[in-house]
Length: 75
Image (cartoon, rainbow, N blue to C red; front, side, top):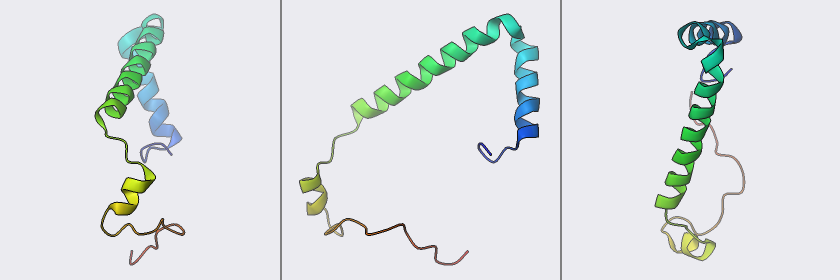
C-alpha cells in the first residue's frame, strides 16, 4: 500500500491521469515529475547542515546511539 491506497485506488488514479493527459503525454509528465522530485531532494540536502557524529554526541540527550527500534507505547 502506497500512502494508504490499495491497488484498486491506484488503478483508478492511473486511469484518471491517463484520461486527463493522454497516453502520449504521460511519459513527459512522468519525466517532469521525476525531475521535480530530484531537484527537491537536492535542494533539501543543500539547505540542511551536516551533523557529524562528534556534534551529535554533544547534543543534549544524545549521549549514545539508540540500541534498537523505538518502543510502541500505547496504541
